[in-house]
Length: 319
View 1: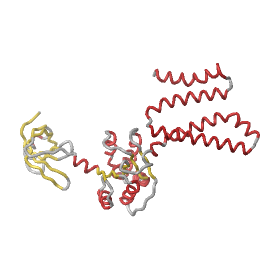
View 2: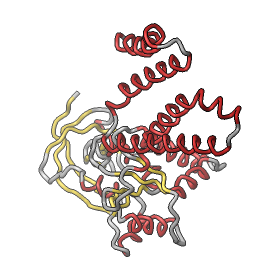
View 3: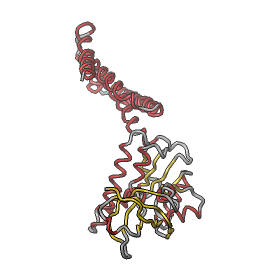
View 4: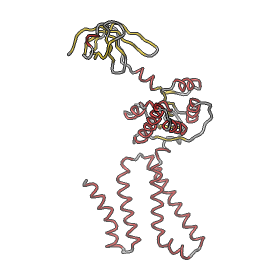
């Protein structure tokens, strides 16, 4: 709260000092007020800006000033007395407004420009399946992934189409995907760009792969078809499902663990529990312990096409 008091004092103090000790001209007072606002905004925002964003801001301010110079030249060439009178009166304010506006607009768009000036594996192309899945946000929040996230425009359009669908499941998927896009763009440490670059392709998988080839970047997906298409074109893929599988804890026969028995199994006296990663554990004599925590011993592991199933026997009951 005290910080905002100083900021308000700076905004009001500049025009007050100019009015009292420099000039009582309203134009000079307004210019001083604008300088105070610029100073406070710069102090507030510059702490969270990266050097690249600041450079883009300076470039935008230069463009804004060049627009002012162009207007000034046009007014002189038009040689209209009334217009010349008002322009001479307010041109200083116009120059300040155009310069500041150019700088702030450039900084606002800096996240879309950052990283796309160069190509390489720092660019991550997020497909629709990764956005609907949503775990991409968690990976970026913990800084497990880095670089620029590029979301193709056609993917956003497909998500909008799903969100407008009459089918409840498709509508839920579309809305979730759009929500993930919003959450990614809200992450201050992650540059996110919506790319409207057009590439050729007969399917969504081909479009994603061709866009990744264009940027020489990597694809983030959980879609098997995209994974397969990318492998054919030697495009790097970061498959979130593969990452999840690789990070599953290693369980060996003979290990002991504490397990909550949730339901009965298919066979007589069997109980079913789950590890934190969702792996199912079948406990032979665990049916009578449903709703309780049980110490179990692993004796067998079965790998199936849908994942692992662990078989165990009870050791010790924990109430």
